[in-house]
Each structure stands twice: as structure tokens, then as C-alpha cells.
Image (cartoon, rainbow, N blue to C red; front, side, top):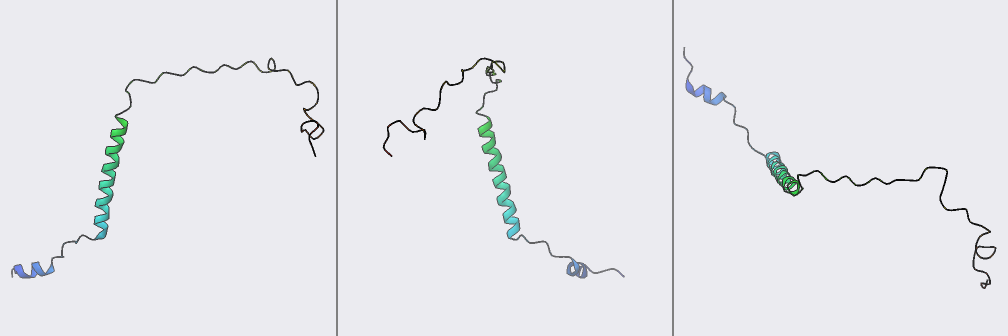
Length: 87
């Protein structure tokens, strides 16, 4: 015996409904697309030429040169303050 069309319609599952999470997915997709657009706009402002290499600093050899050590004691009185300052 052939099945009737009516029983097939009753047994078919209902289509899925969109909820708040689908809306959040759409908002996040739009945010990703906006971020990519801003990234491209920022990136497109850079020059295509390679930057110039800055000169490297040269340092004197270790163990020689430099300023001589200070001669004498610390400046000022015994506490390191100026000589003759009121206490």
C-alpha cells in the first residue's frame, strides 16, 4: 500500500529557528570584517621600499680608556653635605 503524503508532512522536523546566538555570530562577523578593513587601511599607508638600516654604534675596547678615577675624598663635609651648613 502506498503511503499518503499527509503522514510524511507530519513526521518532517521543523526547520531550525534563529536565536540570539545567531545574532551574536553575525555581529562578530561584521566586527571581523571591519577590523580587516581598518587593518588594510593602516597597512596601505606604509611605503613599499625597504627602510634604511641605521648606523651601528661603535664602543671602545674593554679594559682601557675612559675617565680617570676621582682624586680625593667625597665633596662636602663628613655627612656629604656642604661645608659650613647649619645643623
